[in-house]
Length: 73
Image (tube, rainbow, N blue to C red):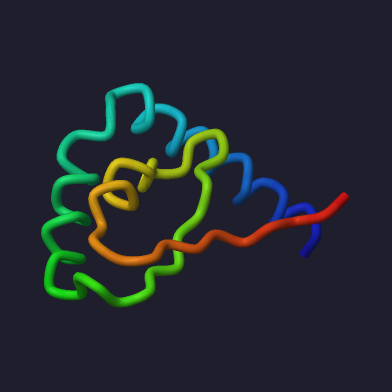
């Protein structure tokens, strides 16, 4: 099971890496449009790592407080 899990993670990362290299497209705009209905409300976000979709432009456009997790250590 551990080997299957590792293989699935490796395959998923390779697929995400290829898509990430192609660009984010309109992901941030679509997210910002969706969040517009929640203006003034608190938003939980995240700081993107490696091939994760970058939500920072949408978080910056949000009209309300935005929080992200803080990991100590």
